[in-house]
Image: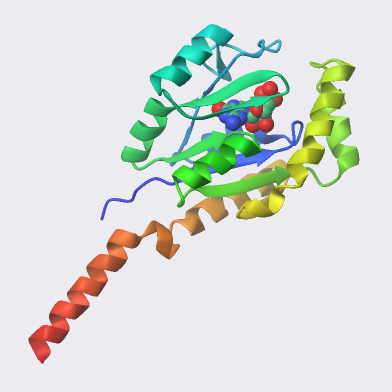
Amino acid sequence: MKRKGILVVVSGFSGAGKGTLMKQLVKSYDTYALSVSMTTRNPRSGETDGKEYFFVSKDTFEKEIARGGLVEYAQYCGNYYGTPKEYVEKQLEHGKDVILEIEIQGALKIKEKFPSALLLFVTPPSVKELKRRLSGRGTETEDVINARLARAGEEAEGIEKYDYLVINDDLDTCVAQMHALIQGAHNAPLRNEEFIETIRTQLKELAKGEN
Ligand code: 5GP
């Protein structure tokens, strides 16, 4: 039986270390495909178009929404962010587990559209550590950092909507834990409906034959 890919949503406060975690996960195991989102925010220094994001204008983004080219999109701290549809569909068909690193509104839209998506929430071990990581990045102004911390407060209200919490203390431990959660999720009945149906049909046929 060909294994189908799972849609994995990874959310977490800005500064939780999701980017590093995802890069390490994809590098360590070949079962994952990382979706590259489209955004209207400006690139940070060191970011390349097509790698971290597809950086586009507001006009281009809105055309993409109208064309139906996004699986989901949301506004975050004054900018649009969205998931291009084509890549996600193709990779799932190829049996890859597709990772969407997106914020909570998008995560909930995905859960609605794809009930079998797995939702993970990444958090640093403490808020003190979160502030340290956000400031330490040195790529954002004080205002942007404060807006992101305020947004973290709102996002914290929705954590229970996720399937698992992942505490990002040590990178390697965290990557191994995420891999175990995702691979374990493949065995949940809701992700194996076809297999379960086949077993049931075969059992019924067997029962008929014996009676
Ligand atoms: P950043 O500006 O720090 O790269 O991202 C800001 C937030 O937008 C993060 O929480 C990130 O996960 C989220 N994000 C990135 N891409 C997408 C997307 O395609 N859709 C949604 N809904 N959120 C996204």
